[in-house]
Length: 616
Image (cartoon, rainbow, N blue to C red):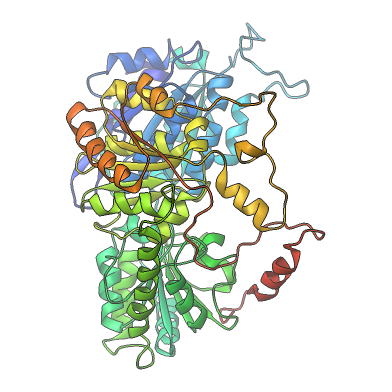
C-alpha cells in the first residue's frame, strides 16, 4: 500500500486493539489529543482528518495539558488503553516534556508524536527551529530522551516497520510501561513508501503475566514462614495486574496485615479487618506503627518510593524485604529478596508454595484493625467542625461522604495528596489517582479530563489548591468544549501553603510562598476570582464558605456535571495551616545553620541502609 508516513502511522494506530482486565476488547489507542501547527498539520493532521470517525481527535489548549490528560486516561484505564498526543515543532513539542516526565515517573503508557524539523535541511533554519552550532542532527525533541521509555526519530518512512513493534511492546509491557516518543520530521510525514498490508492487520494486545522463577518463590516462601510479624505492602502493580482480590485472599489466608502505597490506594476496602491503612509520610500512623515492628515486609508491585518508606525510616533496621514485581529493576532495590513476575500470577503461585498454615505470631493480625481504629478516630476528629475556615481534611471528608463505589478521586500536588492518601475511606476498588511520582502541579485538571473520558460510570472528582489551578487550567475549557464532565474542588488557601509549611517547619523564614510573604508593588494586591474564571472557561460553578456549604456545593456540582456534560467547579476558601499528619520523617536538604538541622540529623541516624544482602 503506497502511503505517506503519517497515513501509515494512523492506519497502524487503528489496527491495534487491547484486552481489558475484565476481558473486553477495546481500541489500544482510543483517542488523540492534538494541537496543530506547521510541523504536523499537513502530514499527521491530514491523515487524522481522513479517519476522524474511527479515531477521535480532541483539541486541547496546551500541549502539556493534553499529554497530562493522556496520562490520566492511561491510569484510569489501568494501563490497558493509551492516549496519543501530537504537537508541532519547537515550543509545542517542548511543552510536552513535563508531561512525559509525569508518565515516566508513574510508569504510565503515553504515545507522544511531536513534529520535528526537516531531515533534508533544505529550508533551514525554519520557524521554531533551535540550531545547535556543533550538532546539526540535534533538535529540541532530543529533550524527550531523558523522559521516554522509548525514543525514535523517523527519518525514513520504512523505519516504521522496525520501530512500531517496539513502540507497542513498551506501551503494553507491565515491566517497561511508560511514555514513547516518535519524533516526526515534517517532510518525512509527507513522504511515501510501499508498506506491506500485514502492517495494518488487526492485532489484540494482551498484557503478559510473567511467572516467577521457582527457586526464588521457594526462598520467598521460606522467608515468610519464618516471619513473626509479616507485613504486606500493595502498590500500583497490584492495580495494573487486577490482583486486588488475589492480594486480599492471600492476606486473609495467612493472616497478614495489609498496607497500601500511594499508587496502591483503594485496593483494600477501608474497613477490612486486616487493613492497617496507607503507609508512609502521607499515609497513616497505624500502618507506620506496624511497619516499625514488622520483621518481614512483603512488597508487591511497588518501587517503595521515599514517601512510602518515609525516606527509609519507616521500617525496622533488621527488616527482611521480599518483593514481587514485574520489573526486575524495581524488585532488586534495597537488597530485597526479589521475586520477578506478575502480581496476580505470583501471589497465586506463592500461595501454592506456602500451603495453608497461617503466618506470624498470635495476635499480630489483630494489630491491623486495632491500630487503624485509632487512626480512624484521629481522622474523624480532623473532619469534625471547629475552625473558622474549612480545613483540607473537612473538605475531603465532605467529598468522601458523598462518593459512591464507582466514583473516582484525584489529586497531585501540594497538601492534598496527604489528605487523600491518609484520610480517604475507599468505597470502590482502584478508584483513586494521586500523581505523587512526579507531583506535577496542573495534573489535577488535565488528568481529570483524561480520566473522565476513560470512565463512563461514576463521577470523577479532582481536588486541587489555588496554586495548581493557576499553574494549568486551560484544559477546563477543553473538557467543557468537548463535553466531558467531572467535578473540580478548588481549595484556595492563599498561596503555596504546603511548601510554606516545609519552609517554616525546618526553621526557614516565611518567604515567597504565601501571598502575604511575596513581593508586590501594591498596598492591597489583587486576588483571583476563581469562580468567575472557571465560569468564563465554560464550567458550572459553585462557591462555599463553610464545611456545610462545601458539602452542599459538591452535591450540586455532581448533579450539574452529569446533567450538563461539562466540568463543575467548587471553590472554597480553606485553612492554610491545618494538615493530616502521619508522624513520619522525610529527608530534605536542611542547611546546617537552620534550626531544623538537629531533627534532620536524627532522621538520618534512623535511616535504614541496605548493602545488597537479601537480609538487609
